[in-house]
Amino acid sequence: MPGPRKLDPSSSPRALLGAELRHRRERAGLSQTELGAPLFVSGSFIGQLESGVRRMQMDQAEKFDEILGADGFFVRNCAALKKSKYPEHFAEAAEAEARATTIKEYAPQLIPGLLQTEAYARAVFREYQPTAIESVIDELVAARLERTQLLADPTRPMLWVVLDEAVLRRQVGDSEVMAAALRHIAGLIARHRIIVQVLPFSAGAHAALTGPLKLMSFADEPPLAYVDGMGIGHLQDDPGTVRQCGLTYDLVVASAISPAASLALIESVAEDYEHEAQRF
Image (cartoon, rainbow, N blue to C red; front, side):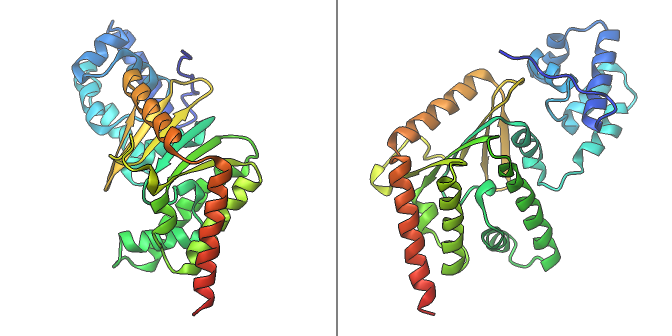
């Protein structure tokens, strides 16, 4: 398994915290496993914090200050890591997404963020926050569109998405918004930039009924899985958990229709939305 990468301590607050953590741990004569035990995390997780692969959380910073006698250093500097354009529960996942070489995702309800158009994203965020002022929605949409720029690279990351049929049928915004959103996905498929399969209603019960799933692989880091819900999200690095999530994704793929049939269905549903839009 590839080990965590090393970062220049001057390159980011996360790298600075990692370098200081390694320095203080070694000075205390503790192994990574020994430091991780009081936090109920593995030695490899401590190694990923030290090399800047993982984001240090405030509760972890508090424990490091206590164990290593750091006089509040980690708590004070961990605050810099909180400055993110993404919600706290998704910030680390967004950073991982930007480093990934392969992303595999199952989407049960909405078009995944990486594939959303501006109008679709705006409609989603407006539903999430119906009373927010427009500038707040603008900021959320801008951050979402910035994520989509990952696909500007012609080859990396490799993105393989399984869309539940509900994603196609659930109207977000008006018919024109939905038609454009689905045509955008169809265009990415036609340009061979992404792989998309649809999990049809006819598949019935399936392995991922509990919700959305994202798997990320990297050139020089262990793989991760991200699972989320309403306002919460968890980045999983436990090898057993990641393997189980991978099996779940494979089972969903096995129940989905082929990429060619999926493209035909997406285009057909987009055409239906276009016809509906023309009626008004």
